Length: 131
Image 1 (cartoon, one colour):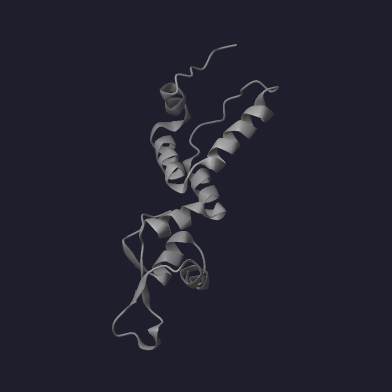
Image 2 (cartoon, rainbow, N blue to C red):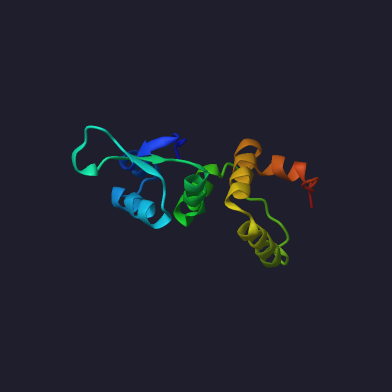
């Protein structure tokens, strides 16, 4: 996802998220986002969206955006952890991620993008062992 500016038109936001302009307009109505008219455009069709923390959190909470971000951020081949423990471990990790706030999820995504999985595991004090 491109970096979002503090004010964007519905078309600019739709293009950066790769969704239809009508979808962004629906979000504005449903979520009550703050907007302002663009001078010189008839009919009130052009609006500037104030991209604040509420808007960013909503966008990051969308499954399509999170999945797209995850695909772009995969940089390392997945490590094999014990096959017998994998389902339970995956469930625990998924449970923790679902309980995180959107802001916490964003911080974690930034950390993973910056340091990768190995850097993240090193910070946790987990070292890969050769079997």
